[in-house]
Image 1 (tube, rainbow, N blue to C red):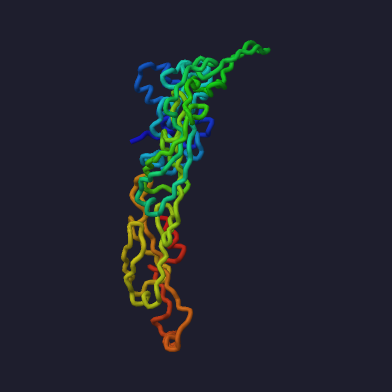
Image 2: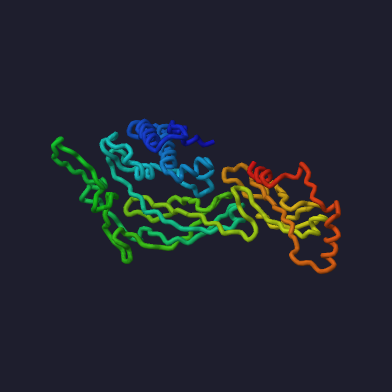
Length: 371
């Protein structure tokens, strides 16, 4: 079972953004590879701390984590934290260490000021899902136009920064000599510049190509959630690492079923005769049609609960229910014979309302729905 992100950083669930950042910096310095060369456990803790910080430092990701736990980042294409490598960590969070390691460092394989590995830009797409796909999970294949290294492109070490990706400047101030490091403008921080540029490639040696990407979407996702497919964004020049493909979920409204969390709602309209005599009805469910039995004398407003017929929980805790709301349809027009019948029944004791204690009020039914 995965460790809780708050426990990894040693903060409470109510911690502020500043407290989370401070806790991450402390952990990252403690387990930094420069301080623990060859220590596999320290490297794993370093990665875990970065993964926890990536989620908890982002308000949207933190809200999803607080609601769904680790399940919000699972299902093939995660929502953010899982599977971070050293390149991800140093490209995203390098500035958090400040001067703890000599004023910055490069990517994985060059911690103490070595060559920095830049990351390609992310791509964003929107995927529409039916309610059935949301309920069961689905694998979608989408066409993505992304930048990749052109065939035959070669790179060489940037002469401006000598392959470090950074340019150091020293300025004399009233406080003394101040040293600052900035991203190299010549290579954009990659430490490499293009040597051979094939026909059709841009200034970075990249070329746009269409690729079919498979996206595994877990059951229970919600509208506006965002999945991440690692490494399927634009590639970076030189020895950089690819960006990610960010997939925004959009759910298509169902004709008869309405979603509320993991539960589904269905409005069933029946005739007065069906309510009096009882009936058998076929209704929609995400797994296909299901047949339900209506007992004679069923009242309008009755809610029938079909357990486990709702949406699979994103956190893996089973499935919601299908709530069938029974509505007795009152005819608006009657013929002479029908009207005479109901006129005779006006004073009939059997037609007089006689609610029992077991017949719950509207407010009690609403309370039961959310309990």
